[in-house]
Length: 117
Image (cartoon, rainbow, N blue to C red; front, side, top):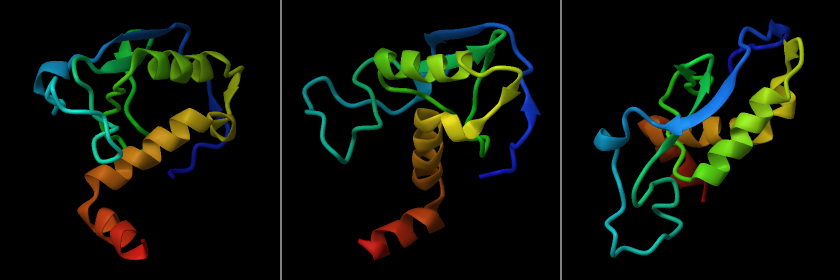
């Protein structure tokens, strides 16, 4: 993860919105069940966290499209809980999502992870 120690809080407002890329993102067919192979996808909408109106990306600059509103609200609460300095060590859901998106978007890393199983 990029070095983010001692990053000052640069935003005032944290919100959850429907992700602007929802129409273009891959979705699960309405008739398909949710499984471990598609758990990161949504049947309908994706959600985004905004900081002062700007959509948050992962620490690696990947698109952070969250498939559930409840999960998006939990991540937003992590961002809201940050004080004068952002401490990414306390942002557990954000870290899990960031690493998950990195694995999904990096073919070499995904291959490595499959070889480890």
